[in-house]
Image 1: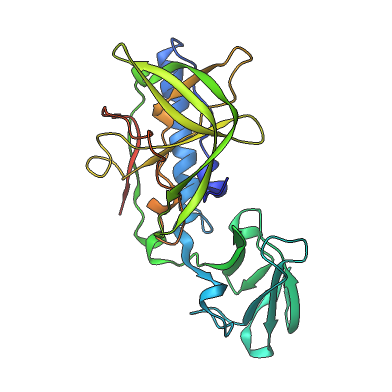
Image 2: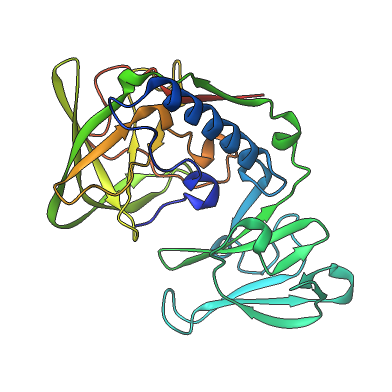
Length: 288
């Protein structure tokens, strides 16, 4: 599965009090969740701070726009010897693990949050990314214009009617479909099954990926998308029970990272994941 989710997109996974649970308690849990989610997005190294994703293949000379140092990929795609070599001079102002960097260092893809990146230039972070054998460097700036302009996430208050009982139906084997990504390129999206749920007596389904911890992840749109809400959203139900039952809580529908910065490569919904109904729940748009 190829996706651009990251720590900021995972924040808010899980469900509330459960379908049919105490509405006041569920509403309070949702408010706390929304506050935590907003704080995570607004953090110095949250998604609003991403100001560039530079693919090394587009810069064979090794110089990246606005990024110090000389960057080149080595090895073969996703092979064991693959990586990125960074060459830095005294005047580049780069550090590795908090120490001044001069000369060369070999790097692999960063897997943690932006602030944990080994390479820094002052408060800026330079994050190594790999997707389908291609290498890139992300430029993260806590002083970004998007972060300065951010005023919050517009979201619909908790509504118990959108915390729905559902059922997970796994596929016999995982499937990979090509979908367009936010940067205009097509990439593979791995799918492990579908969740079924009913709205107003009509059953609907969404194809989902299955994460390593058993939780589910859907990229979906609905009739509000691009109008009253962002053009698509993420949904992260918890791992289904042994009998396949799962709570489908649209109150926790998430804006994808690319709603906060243009330099993320979020996948668009796969075919069949555009619901023919409005879903007036969850996160809607970025304010500011």
